[in-house]
Each structure stands twice: as C-alpha cells, then as structure tokens.
Length: 320
Ligand SMILES: [Zn+2]
Image (cartoon, rainbow, N blue to C red; front, top):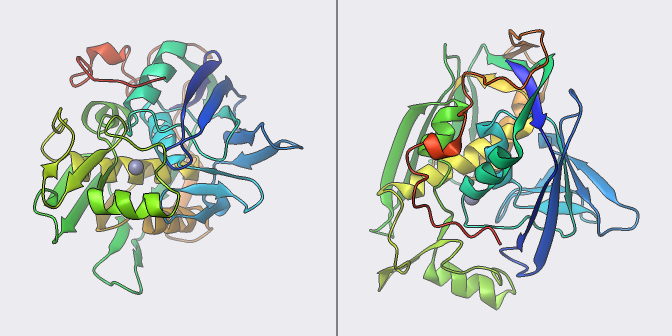
C-alpha cells in the first residue's frame, strides 16, 4: 500500500450547513509524508491546520479542527472520502470556517476526487496495527462507547438506538472496512436530524444552510420529510459509520483492527483516534507493504471508476 494524493487541483463551490455562507474550496496535490492539511485562505495571515486528532477542539455538532482563532468545521465527510480513495496527502484551501455540506454525504466528494484522479506517490503508507483492545466510554452515559480490538482485517461494527424516534429506531451494521467497501456501501449515506433539532439549531443561528437537499429530516409527527425517501433503509447507521471513518481518517495512516461502537459520536470517535496516535503497547506503527514504482496504476482497494459501483447511478447530487 503506497501513499496517494490527488493527480490535479479540484475546485468546488458550495454552502456551509450552519453558517449558510458560500464556501470556495480547492484541493491541491501534496508530497508524500506531508499529510492532509487544511488552509484558511480568508484569514490574514493564512492559517494551516493539519488533519490530525491533536487538532480536534470541538465535536458538538461536527468535527472541528484548529483553534478558536482559526478553525475549520465539518471536515469528516471529506475526510471519509479521502479514506475511501486512499488519499493520504493533500492541501485543502478553504475561504470559510466551515466545509461545504454538498448533499450531506461523502458521495459528491468521491465523485470530484475521482474526476481529478488519484496519484500513487511511490512511498509506502504507514499502518497502525492494534495489538490490545482500547476502549473509550462516555462518563455521563456509560451505554455510549467505542472500542477497537485486534483483528486480521480492518472491520467496523456500529449500532445506534434512538428510543424516542420510531423511524430511526435501533439499527446496526457490521462489515469489513476497505476503501472499496466504504465507497460502495457507505459513502452516499446522508447526515440526519429531527425537525425539532432543526428548530432548536435555527433559534441559535445554526443550520442556516440546511435543507432537505443536504440532510435527512425526521419529524416526530410527520415522519420523513424528504420526498425522495431514504437511499437505504438503514441510511442512519450507515451515516454514523461514515462519520466514524471520517474521524478515524485523522490518524493519517491505515488501521488494522476491529472498531466496535454503540451510540457513539464525534466526541468518542476522535477520542479513540487520539489514543491511537499516542505511543503505547496497544498499537504498533509500521510501514505497509508497498510497491517501489511511482505510477498511477490501479490499486486493489481503489475503484477504477465510481460509475462502476452500485448505488451511484441515479444519485441525486448537489455539487454546487
Ligand atoms: Zn456526518
């Protein structure tokens, strides 16, 4: 497994979910071992924020990286797409504090990245191999937890339980985790919230860019408000897994272990990502077996074209 970057610069214009503001974004190629870095181009001087768990400073509505003076919010859906295509290095320039929400999933990002192409940098990727279990439990609600266990193959098992909402209810998913399985099974699952949450967020000046074009909205009295229905019956848990993968992508390496989570969220995901990056005897960091040649050849996990994948035909995209 070698490190990858984008083959050329990608540009996208969209809106921020909470700010409702226009956001311009560019994703540039970057050299091996430089990682994924966000750059706030609207600040003077520009601020560079590495995509790394040590830069997480708020997880209440989305994953926010940086500092109170210079941050970028809602990085998880693009980070998950980076995982899907195995991209380790890129410079993401953005002129706002919030990433564009696109359709609320990772699929539009995959399509943009796939269009630009992915370049193999000819340098081996690093991999974190889990040797002993690590568990993070929410101290206020011990039923919420995330754990990682040693496993021959990367795997994820995730469950949610929305007792007060029949439409979401309890859902669970367990699957082997590869770039391809992410692209095929998870990438188009959209973010979701209840109509009551939308009302509350709007009263606080949030979710100003939110609409039925970029989120699933469930009302207690009227059910699902999106006229097009769900993309899969368990789209809710699939999106939670997508969020978890996006947060785990902050570790900047491949990961060999089995993630098991129940009622988790960005707080627990990023706490585990942080632990995985700390030196300990629970995790071994090593170079993944890689090929020496620098080429743009297809790699095992990488779909040659997203149009080949099930679930992408007829996807209603809002890419701005
Ligand atoms: Zn999300």
